[in-house]
Image (cartoon, rainbow, N blue to C red; front, side):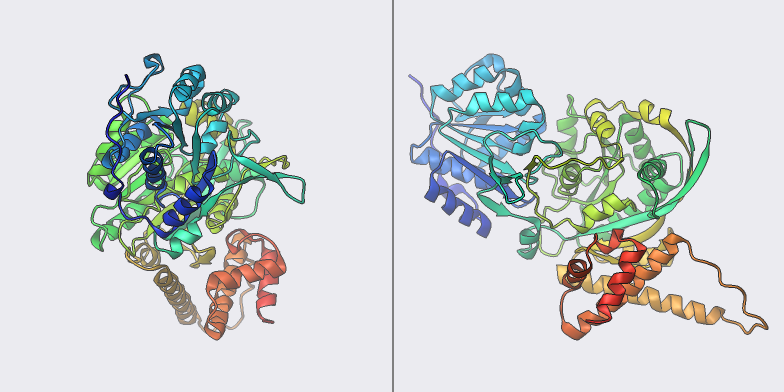
Length: 576
């Protein structure tokens, strides 16, 4: 006779957050087979899911629990979290085991593990009334085998709970057990039963506000045809040129990456000196060779070796756990420290990969938003590339998985980079396409709450230091106030310098025409000044003013707007 371990004690659970209580009430009210909860990284999806599991075990609705997650490391993390509240899950279960050991309530699996032997898990599910938690459910659509396997294995489950912080995919593979609704445009969109987005969590101070520090700079490279090209990151150019300039900037042999890493480490030091004493940093690289090169640069900059995690191979989980519990400064990852991996002290990031899908970007930024105490902020350094600036500006946007929408390639090597994340050997393929010659970095702008701040600054200058030195313990409103003050001081200093340099001349020299990049920076400064003035007149938040201008004039956020769009917004705000 099968003897189950003791039932979990509901009194052992930590107090639930407001969104968790509301979602729990909705779940218990519906008592439906399927429920999808969308919650931003760091909001507490694990605690919510385990509380439901405890409720269902306690009232006899289910007899067993199965958790499916993306990676091996997360299996151990889920088992540990469940054990703390009295739910015993086996993270070492193998497909060959067939049944869980009697002293466990169930097991933790990976999507790959289920995809390899769905029949095994179907039998386990049918043997006992089972509650299945599908963590980061969008991964079940990573391949047809995984999706079909998950559906086959768990379609007979008594209850299924789908969790995700990014309820969308870059392809049209349907996500198992997710409900889709057809809209007026004829497209099918995923439907969630509970949604707690980043904007909600930021308002409740559950997550950290994120400052994006975008760096531009001159880049030079040689094509495979032998032509030498030069371009400035952030200036208007074709998608092919953007991609090549972007990869040139990320080359460890140029000056761009050392300068950005030095700035990121300076920011990390500032956070550690002002309240976040154990703050850590993460560099997201594109391949193994580059990751090791970045780690070497960080060693030279900091005098201490960086922790390198190349994949989910043997030992990677231990290195991640060790880093999370330590006070080491930097972690360098290739296949990104996976979504859901809990390293709350990560507060500074360097987005040093050309992977650019909204899903990948959202997962990456999710590593830095988990709040511990009120007032903590996160800072992410990234190349000043229009596509990334748009994603940074729209971080609070809520997305759904859409089926049937036309797909547009952005020309930024996403397919190649996705293969690199799986294979980690893409460096040779990339190098065949071009040869990076040189690059330098300059602080282009700071993006916060969809608004662009700053007028540009060379690395190593007092102007850059002003932004790198923003205090690390601030409320969202204080972040906006400090950035406005920094920008005002920067504009005033530039005005004083211009006045001091003015000397009488017999003849006015011919004006030097601005480059497109200089013109855009000038217009962006002018627009920000007008928005600040409108804010003082109306007390409306800067973000709302920018959003209203976008509604009236159309176009992307100001960080990636064209010269014509900026000019139109300037003309519009002058009439408000």
